[in-house]
Image (spheres, rainbow, N blue to C red):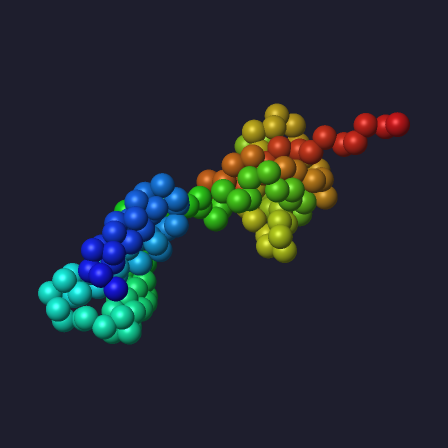
Length: 148
């Protein structure tokens, strides 16, 4: 393959990384393609099979060894896993008094919970997660269904 084609593909992948949150995944494929373009331009890798092997090696090694350090250093572009809990329903394992920390079960795990609700919420009540702070869920009681 022509060297400029590798470089073009690499640049396109780097642009995709900017606009699509992929947590530094596409970035390494772009860098690998640009490196292969450089090797092809200098005559080190002239055959298509050598270029494909180099691309695969560069991409896999860079993802394996550089993705986590870069994600930690510059943060991730994807949503945090804890944010996925917002809107979920938890069931209180104990009474929750205003201002206190209580316990609730969500997805088979016991969590610490707090509520800005002004009244006590009784054990067993279903509560909706409104935000997550560290390992504490902030909940509001779910409204009981209207009687028909």
